Image 1 (tube, one colour):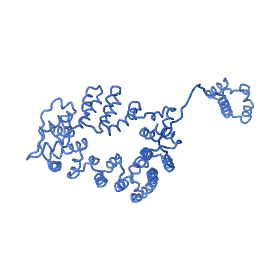
Image 2: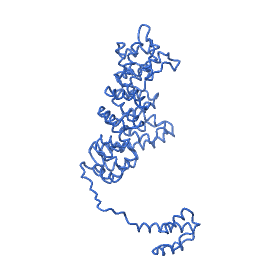
Image 3: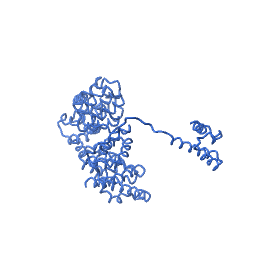
Image 4: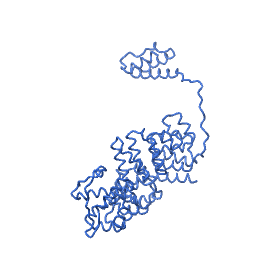
Length: 483
């Protein structure tokens, strides 16, 4: 239509150009065009109304694309029961709250109970899955056969087409592949490693690095052969991460090499902890050990020993010194050299996740080591967290939010008393993000967490109302799936 081209040119060049006359328009529009010209003398207004008129005329005359012999199968019959009315109303309220953590909490309950959402919620959840990839597997589980059917008509919803973990690993998006490998590594570490070995030649360097880091989950002797083979990789970063992982396996050659060297060089006698490090050969230096101290507080021998000790299981010292963790800790912290080296053993406790030594440090050390807290039994974690939160608040909160279980009332109260005073660092989004950790029973305790300052108390009162709303939705979610 030539008149439409004229409209486009006018839009590009300006209304000073001659607008299309009524005689240039289709006859069916001549009367409407005349009314537009009579109603206003403003050229811009005339142009916009004429363009709108012509646009709608063109749209009305457009024939839809037609393709012969196209058939669309119906969605398969649902195999799971639909959620209750209360559960669906709760989901609607959670979506309005815009709390992804609470949404994940709801979806997890729905999936665990093998329920599916009402059909009208399926497209909405599928769109959320596009934006929040970690929710995709739960969205698929909760959308049932209708979600699987709808995914055929929108490529962005194709995350719902994989039916098994292995299929998702082979055909999923990068984020999906990471999520499924992480999950399988937790439950079947050997399977996860074999999957990675099979696809390894096809992965680029960046993907290799991201996937390798997941091998740190349940790492063990069975991973040594694969990790040692990565010494031939072109990427320096890949080789560094492989070595870092090998240093977390007690029976790897690099850890055994470190143990032999410490056996020769570290002794405890009547003079206390003594270190006499032999000359380091090239094979040790290539593993990342620096032979010269970078601090005036450590001699070269002490600096080398400290690096080696960080990568040796704490249990080595029980065998080497024929002693117990309690005695070793008590003895070394009274010794000048031993006191300087104890933090290296603490790092080894964390690296090898040695719960027995973690407990020994908490019971016998004069120094509080915050990084040990996650290795303690939950009750002890919380006891020490509450005790030291005034000194190490940010570290303790950082450890707490990594937990997947619900905090106790006492720990939550201690955390809230701190966060209520830091309203900019710990705003509404913080509580929304970690609402899954917060116990419903804290609602009655919220007024006790309020800070003394008037301006902070007013902000906390508003924040606590928001927390209460989220916790009521959490409580309602639990109830709706327990009925």
